[in-house]
Length: 216
Image (cartoon, rainbow, N blue to C red; front, side, top):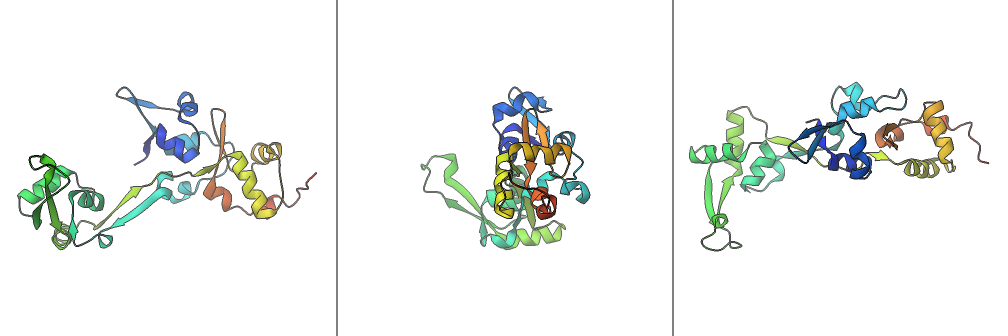
């Protein structure tokens, strides 16, 4: 998965959605949804020659937000949504597995629903039977999902981090000089928004980079 929507991008960049819309390369699907190839967007908007970690790993920027979901973390009885999370199977496949006796299950009555409600009848599946199915079909018993979180500092957040690490206070003008002129601070620019990738920034030896800096 490399395509994300504008809301997800706004979380990653810590920037407003309305600010991003005019400046992103977007592919319109339907009436309201815009999908962005996050890797292409970031690579096309670098302000200097730094490398994102995913460039060397030959993966995707999104991998830094992945969470591993393992069947071992679930109870012995599984709901449909649990199987979807663990395997990535669509609900139609789980329906097929149940109706073709490929999973052990039982039905329960969900008391939150009225007696004649379609949602009252729920299926609960045996975790062990799912493990046996996955082993038989050489399927993995884990999956990954992505939790979208802030992955870039604003310029002011970067200045705060530098002060915390080095006990020096630099101005925005100085930070821009280290980005644009010296090329020592990794940064991207989308429209008028400058952001600094957290992992790449925090892995720098800032003590060396700012060794000649003197506060005025």
